[in-house]
View 1 (cartoon, one colour):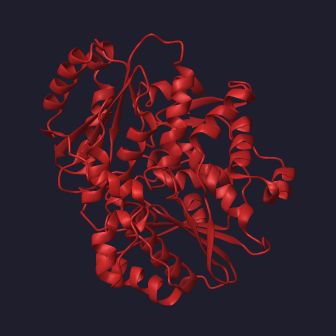
View 2 (tube, one colour):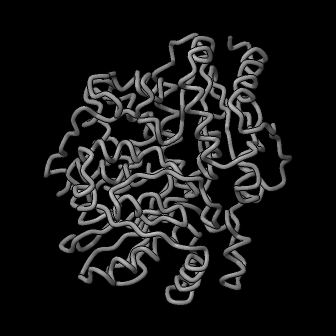
View 3 (spheres, one colour):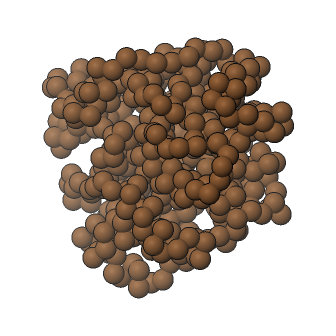
Length: 440
């Protein structure tokens, strides 16, 4: 698969190069030069296929002969080995639970797939690689667990101090070996900016082999298209138009869905459900993309004021707001509206949702109110509610069951390094870090 940079369609690299680089040399994000259409037979037979089968067929279609069938099977079976159930709440109303992976968040799909893919691609390399990850909550722990203990790879997590939940912070900061957590005095946007600046700094790049495991990395994005197909496969009645409501922050999850649609998945509409950080709905309303400082909310993984994957979306649709508006509906919701949605899901359907899934529910309700019809609606539930138990339990008046692996994490000691959001401080840290780890 050949990929181009969103900053220059003539800047073309192979899939392996794109995975290792993370970001194009010109600062753009990678997208396939051409997106293949899956055969009609695939959609006819998919009900009988497992999630791993579907992932393998899509990967093979995208990657063609770049990776052998045997290696693809190993990568997929080793990284995507957890359930992806579609839970029916009501007629035409479903929730796709994406939180059954090791760190109880949808980020496990992309992080584990990328870790396995990067390990495969660099298996013969004698160079050490530093993975830089900006996280607003769940990405960091998913990446850290995906790469934990892998030889030749060091993971540096950047997260905003005081702006992730206590449980998320425990997941981020309690690993050792090749994982280092940086607690940044700033916002997620500061963390993301530091990562982008590092990739653009020639002095750093000449001394350290860098890669990124955020959704800006194409290997993180591809597996996020797999579960849209599998959700569709689990629907019993495929005669009704399908709508996905996607909790959205950095827009990687939404982009994965759009990629699935471009490959042939029959999706009627995507609902990009956002919190107070309303950059996407404002763009769809005004035609202007205006990044702004992120606002802290209870759905913190979506606290993004300058979503990176916006560049991919506009590139996929030739910078046409009208075309994007044709496939994406977007609304934003306050903390109070999010809390009300958590309450309603519990009282009406006996379903315990986390704040992100609740935003997805609120947006779906608004869409159905504005565009009534007989749909198959699917809300993406992106994190286990136990990760936000302090919020959820107050709303539903009931204790949220905490999985054992999360309970064990809470007993461990926090390990983080605090630094400012100034790039020179971060650059100094990387130089010292690389020397300590004998990477330079």
